Every structure is written in structure tokens, then in C-alpha cells.
Image (tube, rainbow, N blue to C red; front, side):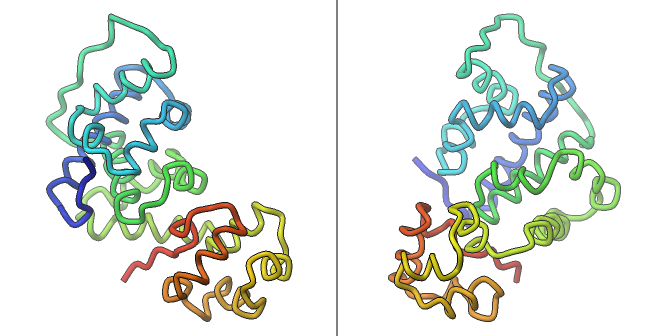
Length: 217
């Protein structure tokens, strides 16, 4: 069963669980969060979260999610540290909540998010953003990621495949000028026909959604 992204209750619960998971990871288990999120990817739980599997988003606490990740990759323990109880939100909890918010709003994979945003980056913005409502601070973090990407998602995937714009045009059947316009943003790929984006995604060996741009408006 998957969640409804328009449900703010589910979003807030997901953010709380991610916050608890990151906090428990760092403070109870002394694990580096960047390393743990590599484990999160390998375990398959990151993908389940991204797909909207309600079992992982709402059915497990953040502490339990941490243990699930470790169990899936072969770290077997029976003496886990006790779950943390905090009266106030600290930087580690805040980072987890923010990461969940960004993934929720953009639907980007965690791997893509963390390729542009390290936990060190997040921590450096905590003092400035911690007292803002998530609806104000979250878009700032998303904007930070977009600035670091320095290019459209189409360009990123084209470069990943080692294709020139002309090469992509030949493989996809999409006019090279149109590809150029999508990459510089003079034409909105989100408004392209399904056929056009489908042909591009096939040529680039990715999903249609991987080529669509997040719009913060």
C-alpha cells in the first residue's frame, strides 16, 4: 500500500520517522550518516520509501528502520542501544526531517539528493533555518540542491550515457534544437508530450519521471 503525497499528516509522520532514524544513527549508534545512507540504499529500504511503501514510512519507528537497514545488510545484533527520547529537536533530528521533506516534495531518489547535499551541508544550514516553518526552510534546501546541480535532469542523464545532444537526437528521434531548449530551460520539459519524454527516457535508459524538473512555485 502506498501513501498519498497530498496527505500532510502522512508527510509529517514520515518526516518525524526519518528525523528519529538519523538522530538514532548518529547519537545512539555513533554511525556516520553519509555511510549509513549508503547502507540504506543497499538494503532496498530507501527504494521502498521512495515508492511510497506505507509499511516503511508509517509502520516502523525511526529506530526500528535503522535496525531494519542493518539487519538487511547482514548486521545482526540483539543489544541495540535504547531508543532516544528528546524533548527538543536537535540538529540531527532536524536533518532527518529535512531530508524526508525534500524527498517527499521532489520525489527525487535519496541517492540523487545526497549526491548534491551532504549531511555536513545540511548541518551548516541548521542555525539559519531551524526556526523556520518547514514550508519555508524546505524550499530553500531544494533550491540549494538545484543550484548545485547546474543543469537540467535531461543534461545530467545525457552526460551519464556519454551522449552529445546530437547523439541523443539521433537515438531518440527528438529534434536536437528541442533537446537544447529543454536543457537550458527555454522550453519546459514538464509540458512536453508524453511521446517526446518517453522517447528521451528510452534513449537514456531511465524512467520518464527522471527527466522531469522540480518546480518550486
